[in-house]
Image (tube, rainbow, N blue to C red; front, side):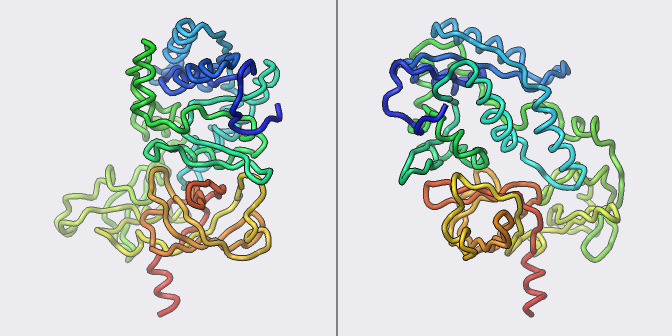
Length: 381
């Protein structure tokens, strides 16, 4: 497969659609058929634990019903081993290191646009298609990843790390639609999944409490909860169970000496096994800069980065965050320093900084180290 992105004419072309069993990919199938494509659905099983929380069996049944309604063939493939090796093992290692990973980014890069793409090629697919809310186009000979028309559902953040050659072979049928339009199409076609609830959170955790799940793989290691001044205010169950900016579940509220302001996680001291907390909108919750590594770009790096110069652009440090103005300075071709125009709250190492030029997603990098606004003031004061 080596076709241009988002072809205008796919009539008669064999398109392999990732069909999850949800409403989005089901409507993608309808739109592809309306364009005359020969649609084959491919449903992936990425998690096999029968623990009552995973919905993979129900999703497969929903995918079968959709394919019966739309009269398209369904292929089913099990990528559970690849998922554990390439996504879940990294997820556990990152939490063990005190970081907060985003497995959805890895799943897209390694599974949906990695082994899935290879399997689709063996099925004779000329294009891939997914139910993601995103768009793409080819300009000046390079493929570009663009935000979806429905910015409240845009998923370019999660797609920033896929390879350009995979993006060039992929169709996003929902990119120009609003979510309400997607559900209306499903309802008009009497699809059984027209009102199916959108999946949220991390797929393999399901609806169970996060700490309960993680403790199966990373047993707790209790330690002190302290203020930046070293005053102990409680005990944590294990540093991996907390993330920067977290408020709930700290167990330090209601102390007589705590005042009225809520407590938040501001840092982790892995060497001492200490969770650092602050009250209210403390300066330690805000960051002026971050260092990021393993940068990946959609196609070639921006001209400025390739030439070792600083780049002005916008950045998201978490999904659904409004774009923030910043400057990127390359340390090496894959390591960056990102300086924010306005200090950012609760930047979490392990998450991704994803870069934008207007509606175009340029790429992203893994957040390694965060420099607090208070640290910057101390250095310059």
